[in-house]
Image (cartoon, rainbow, N blue to C red; front, top):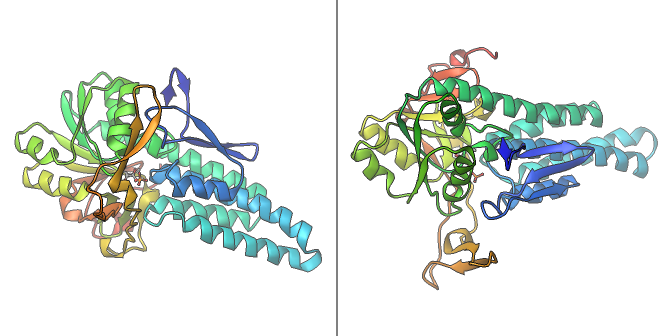
Length: 362
Ligand code: MRU
């Protein structure tokens, strides 16, 4: 997508260095950072400098590729002869475990590490090629999601979205926002209600910034306003992203999604999840098996933003002495989901047999 007229991906690798848009600085500053080692890549994921299921997946794939390059150097340098292959795979396995421990919920992270790890067992060149393929596939899937999703959006539609499942959350295009961009580019009138998405405000900060860049009319709403807008008939459809989708269609997404889905169901408003098939976890029988990340209470207790001179400040916004609970995701049961917008088409949310119901790859 374009920022200030220049085409960007959210994360990319060139000559053994990973470049990424630093999301913690947005929307106040647009900064490209670098990660030169797989350990630095892990820090970017843990600290949410890079976030969103697909972007995390691409970063994890690149981290695995960098780990394979450094493991092959260490194996040659450290132990000679027959043992170097053992050293290589031991280092590789240790790196994979650490990369996978950065964040537990988004399926795409594990999808990427598995693919790149398997290629790395052949060679580090294969690992680099596979990591690029994972990132390219993420961008391509998101573009296709936009095309399929656009068919659901009528001219004049008012769409509510939660969190950020735009291009910043993926390598390019995004998922929930990809159909919105496609509809807007094709000349349809669309209007987006953007949930602020406390505590980290991915909606107010990132989704709003993206929509502004693309010239899509939108307004930021408090997290607790959606139900009232739906009750007043002001929302035509809800589209969100997903972090992991279980075999029965139950879907983990940013905390607060469940409430929107239940309310949309009550008022007969279509509720769609836009996600690539790399987010589906068929080994996970239902939402009960999805691990929900719990993050630091400081994300709830403190907020940050710039003063009039652009200097960033972090201030406490909650009663001193109180603690906070900070689950990062919730699980929406499939019965509340109208359908999944995937790169292979739109599929029902409660497939009888998940494998059988996924349309074939394009
Ligand atoms: O904690 P985050 O910001 O990495 O959360 C992930 C998300 O962006 C959302 O849950 C999103 O709606 C799903 S897909 C990117």
